[in-house]
Image 1 (cartoon, protein in one colour):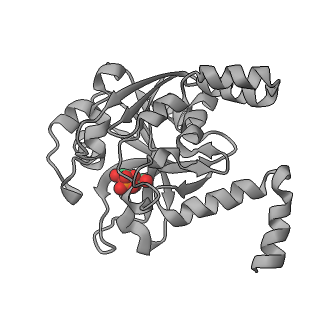
Image 2 (image 1 turned 90 degrees about the vertical axis):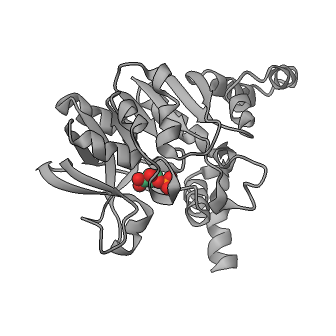
Amino acid sequence: MKAVIPAAGLGTRLLPMTKNSPKEMLPIVDKPAIQYVVEEAVNAGIDDILIVTGRGKEVIENHFDVAYELEKILEERKEFEKLGEIRRISQLADIYYVRQHLPLGLGHAVYMARKHIGNEYFALMLGDDIILANKPCIKQLMEVHEKYKSSVIGVQKVEREEVSKYGIIEYEKVEDGVYRLMDIIEKPSMEEAPSNMAVMGRYILHPSIFSFIEKTKPGKNNEIQLTDALKAMLKEHEIYAYEFEGKRFDVGGKLDWLKINIELALKRDEFSELRKFIKDEIL
Ligand code: G1P
């Protein structure tokens, strides 16, 4: 299965950090955010990844490319550990790029992948969502897809007050954690929301989604919304939702970006002093 990672967003919630740097390249401890998403795909067995980029995102391509001069210098200096890590990044997967010329919305960004994907189910992974899980989140969805042979959307419950930040689903339980989608609404108000089960940036999609996107008019925020195309697809195809295991961070916003940095840094032995620093000098 191929994966698509849209990375064309402007990152306005992270300004001024993102004034001249793509949000996907912001560091989370010592790796750019998008590398976590690529590694999630790779850890799920995916080796063909299409990243949808746009103006100013060229550094993403360089990050996953061979850095010949850097490799040569590290080799000369016998810094083999660093060299291995740098090389590993350029060998993670076959990564392809396509540009979204105008920021017309997530649905439109996904539509840019139609030719690369062709006529197969594909994994869609949004770069703003980083999910720390025992089993890669997209792998969990792939397993549900294997069983039900349909499109599957990753969901988790959110606080009622938070529903207007997400695609929200109406559902019927099929088995523990697996639901049949009845409806889906992009960023509803608390009153409109059919539940508090929110779409969390991981999808396995039937390729017919592209023809539904084609017919989708601009929706919320005047953007072509993937959620609206899914709603249309639901009339003709069964779609399932899976409440995946894992802790999800919205790194397209400052608070979660800070949180995941702290959480991942505290897990690393080399930063053991950080815990003491926070306890003794901050709290
Ligand atoms: C997108 C989707 C939304 C989903 C969210 C998850 O919104 O449109 O349905 O719940 O990602 O992060 P965005 O956050 O890009 O506005």
